[in-house]
Every structure is written in C-alpha cells, then in structure tokens.
Image (cartoon, rainbow, N blue to C red; front, side, top):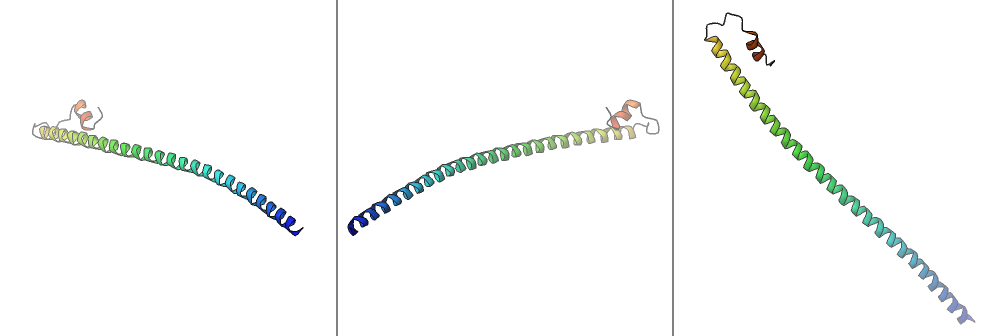
Length: 110
C-alpha cells in the first residue's frame, strides 16, 4: 500500500513540476517577446537620435555658411562706405549737404 501511495505521490509531484515548468516556459517566452520589443524601441530611438544629430549638424553648417555670407556682405558694404566717405572728403563738397540718395545709402535705407 505504501508503494502505491509513493508512486501516486511521485506521479503527482511530476505533474506539478511539469505544470510549473510550463508556467516558467510561458514566462520566459513573454520575457523574450518583451525584450525583442524593447530592443526594437531602442534601435528606433537610436535611429531618431542619429537623424536629429545629423539635422542639427546640417543646421549648424548652414548657419555658419549664412554667417560667413553676412560677414562678407558687411565687409563689402563697409569697404564701399569707406570709399564713398574718402571720395566725399576729397571732393571739396564736405561742407555741403549730401543728396538725399547719398544719405539713404550711408544710412543703409535703400
């Protein structure tokens, strides 16, 4: 009789262990699925960060180029202004009122 109960006990233990192993297997599969989802999210995030960095670098280069163009324009305008002032100083008309067009140019109004 004891053998019979021992065998039933071992059989019940094996069934319980099998059921527990099945639960662990399901949990492992769910964790693997979640891990794959997280990896995909991180890869997507990394791609987004890389794209944003590339866009920021392009914006920085464009801004630097625009600044260089503005500096060149300013230098050209300053040189033209100096030339005009020197020409006016040596023309003998430095005590006379400038024409309105010349004043607008010097004030950079038009």
